[in-house]
Length: 78
Image (cartoon, rainbow, N blue to C red; front, top):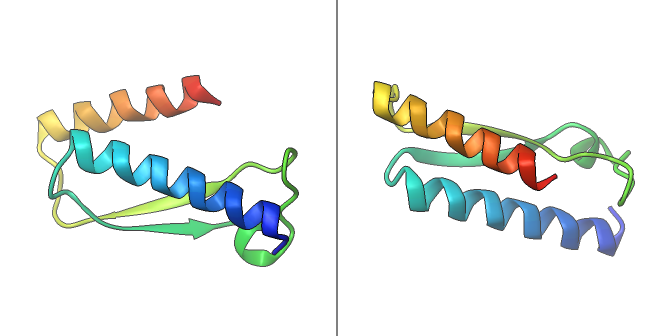
């Protein structure tokens, strides 16, 4: 991957991980990058970044609500 792409991925992953762990502590097990960034077809400024969050346990109803709020927050930032 191009160094600019590496930097963009690192920033996005760090931001998303911080949001999840701040608002839903102890829920996130891992955050995995998927899609074009992994396949080598990522184009900075054109491609989106796709992540899959693996959770430690089935979320409670309150955590599910929090996940929805975080999703909307992230979508509003893009």
